[in-house]
Each structure stands twice: as structure tokens, then as C-alpha cells.
Image 1 (cartoon, rainbow, N blue to C red):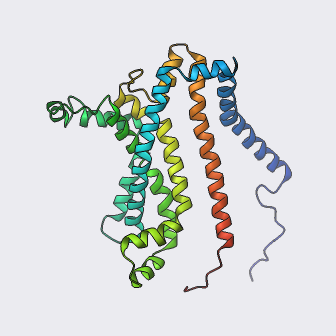
Image 2 (tube, helix red, strand yellow; image 1 turned 60 degrees about the horizontal axis):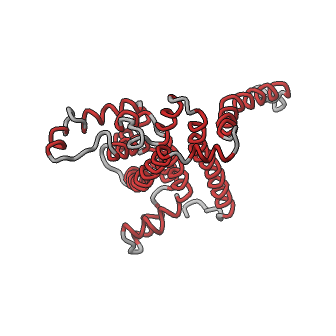
Length: 290
């Protein structure tokens, strides 16, 4: 005869002392690792008042870096959204040899150091690289220019949208798409009217993460851009240049822009997750087989 189960047995973490210790550790780690650095950035940036902050932020080289970063984001984010939708659609809605390999290749940038990726682009598009002689012969400049910055940023941020879409699209299955096809819908209509509405919150979240990473990318961009002040310095590189030149206030003022992007991403994440939960609560429960 099986021994009776003790339903009054205390679980790990049920004790008041254990919960207090865990909560204290989490709050302390959050304060030291996240809140304190953000507080220092904004306090140092506004230490001499708003006028000094604004004057530091409108330096010509900083404004150029902000503009270059925005251009990079405006190109990379839409491209990665399109790539993410296509890759997630192919992986989750079709069965073909090498599907898992394709998914592993898409996530490859997460396992490669951004600096290594930047060096790889140098060996492909640099003067001594694979396509270097051809590019020089046709007066096409990629490395140490905007195209290399965009290419490196696209490589680093390629998996963000895919990683948000694939799990959700796998969980949803193919039933709705197959039903739409049986009713005469073409592939574009299925994507536009069936698939994308079901994953719109994950798509928005992936796009927000992609944008934040593009604007804050340092390693790969520092290699392929040359970090030329006022020409190929993105905002992240400009912050380093300002700090190395002892322009501390200007460096912290520029850093507030990236910190603001990070905070905006967190707020967007919270709002998207809240909207998704509300949508799930409003959706009627489906009976098995429907």
C-alpha cells in the first residue's frame, strides 16, 4: 500500500525568512546592477543644469552620431522584421529537410562575439578581403562607411524578431492557415489576414528589441566603421570618444539617449505583454478539435 502524501509539507521558499532573503537579494542585485548605473547616467548628465546638458547634447559630432544611428536603425529594423517574418513562416509552417539547421543558422549571431562578426566583415569586404579588389576597382566603399555599419548591425540583430515569432507560431500550429487556403485565400492573404494578426504583439516586441540593440551596438560597428569622429561614429562609439577625451558631461548627455531607448523598450515590453494578456482573457476558450 502506497504511503499517504503529506499535503501539508512545506515547499522550498514557503518560509517567511527564505522569501525575505530571496527578495532582498533580488532587490539588491537590481538596485546595484540596473538602477544605480541609470541613476548615475542621468544625475551626471544634469549635474550642471539643463542648459549645460542641452549644450553638450547638440555638439555637431554628437548630432551626427545620433543621425547616423537613426539611419542605421531605420534600415536595419524593417529589414530584420521582414527577414524575421519570412524565416519564422518557413520554419513553422512548412516541413522540409534542413529546417532545424536553418533555425540554428538564423540564431548564429547570438553565439558569435560581435567583434568576431566585425572582423569577418573586414575579411569579406575590406581592401584585402574576399571582395576587396572588386570593390576597389569599381570605387565601391563598404568598410569604414555607412554600408558596413548597416551590414554589421543587421547581422547582430537578425535573430531578435525570429526568436519572438517562432515559439508562438509553433504553438498556434497550421490549422487556421490551412483552413484559409481551403477557402481560396492566396499565400499573401493568409499571411496578412491570419498569421500576422495572431503574432502582432510578438512582432512588435521583437522589433522593439531589435531597435534597441541596433542603436546600442558597439563591438561589430567599432570594427567595421573605423570610428572616425563626425563621419562613421555611431552614438555608442561617440560616447566612448567623448569619455576618452575627458568630455564627461557630453559623454553622459549622449548616454542618456541610449538609456532612454532602453527604458522605452522596457515600457513597450510591459505594455505589449499587458495587451497580450488582456487579449488572451477576452478570447473565448476553444473546444478540442476546433
